[in-house]
Image (cartoon, rainbow, N blue to C red; front, side):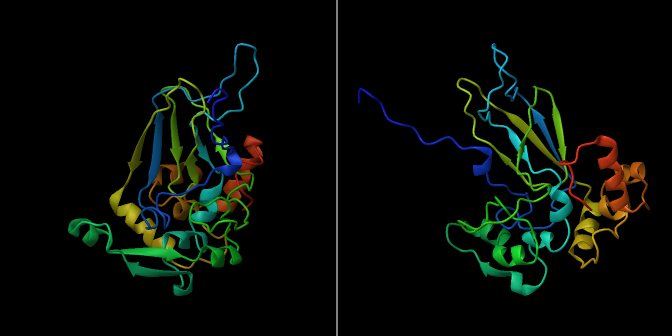
Length: 248
């Protein structure tokens, strides 16, 4: 018509929903790889306009929930990827819409009782598998998603249990492209998954070797036998970024 039609309302950061690649809505397997690497193939701002004012519109940014990996990599947060007490998940056959080959490879799917996990203290706010209208705290710092501003050629390294999402691109005429690589040390990644499935008591009792079992170089740099909670507190003090990591 002469006045045109109103388009759908633009999403904001508060509307985004996150996932991890191992969560029950995706691969449904704890610790499926050792490190997620993203390389920006195009600029992804906003970087400001000619008048010097930054744009608030989303540009297809990769968004992360800072510090979320510390909660989601260990029980009860890791039960989002299956495992844990049976009352928090159930398996059921998947048959419809699958070829025979795929049905054998994905014979079962796990349904996680997200509301029960929230009652156990897991922060699942904005999780893509959460029932509609369920209120919960966001994982990590609790401040919600952080859109990353990247130039072409920039690389991002993410822990495999980091909550993340891609935002819509509202920048007219701009294409956002990234290449992702999932790095996996097969023996150590398997060992890390087995360790993560165990019931560990106390968030502050882990060593850096346990936290970064399949990244031994990083563990060595931090001090393999150092207490992870003390290292985390030291990193926060030296960076001065209070919202970057959760309290140990």
